[in-house]
Amino acid sequence: MASYQKLIENRWRLAGTAAAVVATTAAGGVAWASSTADPTPSPAPSASPSAPSTTPDTPGERGKGGGAHRGMFGLGGALHGEFVVKKDDGTYQTVATQRGEVTAVSKDSITVKSEDGYSRTYTLTEDTLVNAARDGIDDVKTGNTVMVTAVVADGKATATSVNDGTVRDAAREKWGFGRGPR
Image 1 (spheres, one colour):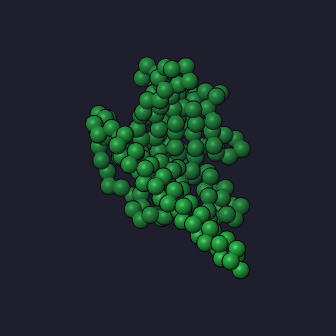
Image 2: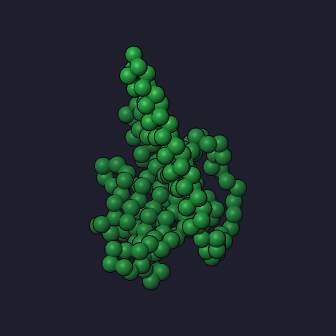
Image 3: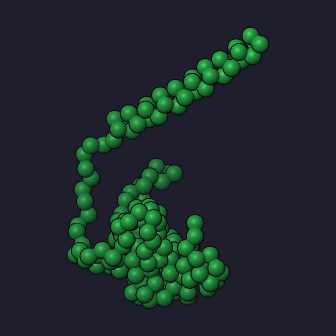
């Protein structure tokens, strides 16, 4: 019986030690993250004309073309923007993203207008990944809500991917998946 009691005490010690390690690691991670954050703000891109938002403000509520608590397409509700990434070869590349309504589309380009009025035309190539339906870019129509990711060089934006939320949601409804978990 004494050995059973020791086993119980040792299990609680082990559990307590594990909990302390987890708590210390979490606290250390938070402290590290806050101490390495760059307090200097980056320059903001030029402002676009603003329009009232029609995107739901309630977490978990969905808007046109999908979206959830993290915003449409998982970008926290971002409408458009550019950022610079370091490539494997050590050089840098500008990447643009935009969420909005298709105002023009062809085999060679797509023009998207965000709800704040910002509009941009993206070149499409045979390497552009189009997440729509069977016919790819042919299924993307004017008025659809899309998310575009592009590489920008010399002021020209070449789409790397086009994700059509309108076509995706229509397919989900057709196959009976409704608005369930993603």
